[in-house]
Amino acid sequence: MGSFQMAVLLLFNSSLRLSHSEIRDHTHLGDKELVKQLQSLVEAKLLNTEVGGSV
Image (tube, rainbow, N blue to C red; front, top):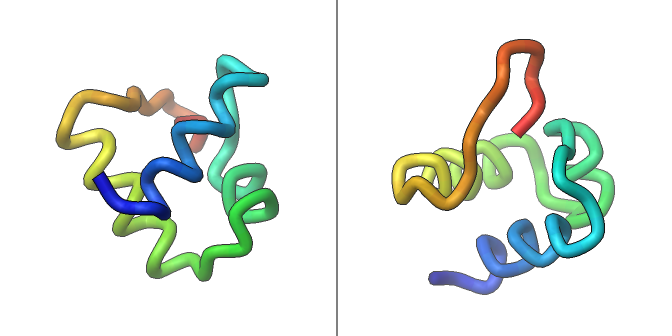
């Protein structure tokens, strides 16, 4: 697991649901990099996605 992925997962210590924009605002990752990291976490079944854009 990389540092960016860990930073994303740590956000969920204080919230059960976060939107793409909330994660982007907290991590300051660009959209392309953030999508890459989120996709990796979803594929590893560490995150779930919901209709409407929430992760």
